[in-house]
Length: 90
Image: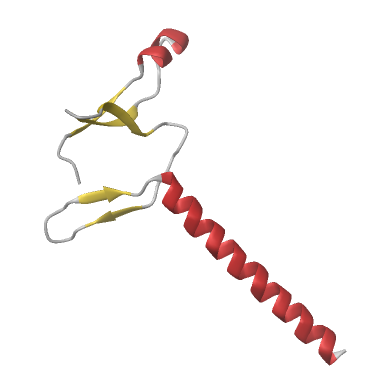
């Protein structure tokens, strides 16, 4: 993990284009600079909070997409198994 600062701000391009841009959640560190973590287009993102210390971890979209793809694949397998079972009973 890297140490840095998290803050809400607008993007420069969004402000120029829209006049009043929606806020983004940014993370900034010395190595990589300012990075958008969560934009107004993504209303929600999976996150975890430590109940003891209050630390918050926001999951990157790739992890959430990968988990969703795995869940969808399992649902497809389950549906196929049910279909075969029903065909065998007919």
